[in-house]
Image (cartoon, rainbow, N blue to C red; front, side):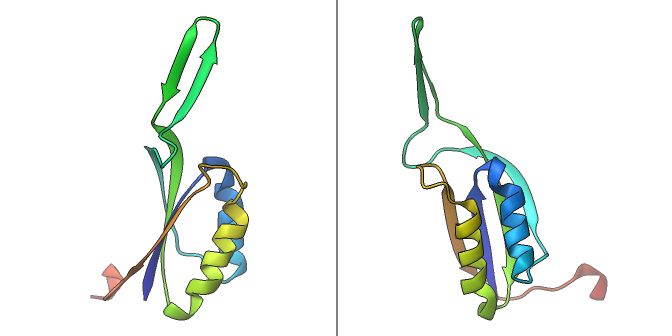
Length: 105
């Protein structure tokens, strides 16, 4: 099994959820997070000066799936989340040794 962690733009959340549902993945954990990537934030300038926002709102979507679904899940997330601009997000794929439902102990 693998855990896929996707850090995406908030406005792309519904598209990513729909895309994952389309490839048969329904179990998700969604967390609203803040952070910054390689670009170091966004700088705004006006007549009175400039300000840098270095903590940008993102959404973290996590799912644990069988190894055979990883490629289709990654393709679905990338297709749904991309805008082609810096700040589209990041994907992490981690091995999961074991997963169990609490109620079945």
